[in-house]
Length: 121
Ligand SMILES: [Fe+2]
Image 1: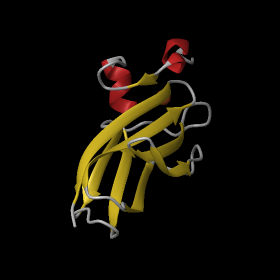
Image 2 (image 1 turned 30 degrees about the vertical axis):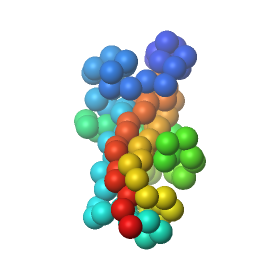
Image 3 (image 1 turned 90 degrees about the horizontal axis):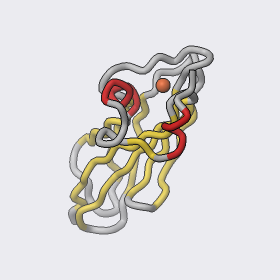
Image 4 (image 1 turned 135 degrees about the horizontal axis):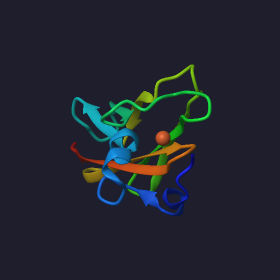
């Protein structure tokens, strides 16, 4: 059953119920170093604990932002996907940036996970 209160906000590890957060907060990891204008790989896995992908309860998509700038969306299909993705990202400005990933569960709403990245020349 859908938890309606979770649909009224963007949920995080800090604000969501711990048991639910464990399965929904996107975990971002980076391969290698982020250099200005050079592609690097951003891995996003929904949840420290696996989230099921059954018809009726599944992760619908993941969005990736750098700060407030949209980068990508990946849609998922129940039964046919696991909510994990690797993206090739190119950032054009030097300095510390915050990667923000949002996952949406059809029963538990939107969840945000973040990762700080230092983009160097
Ligand atoms: Fe869920």
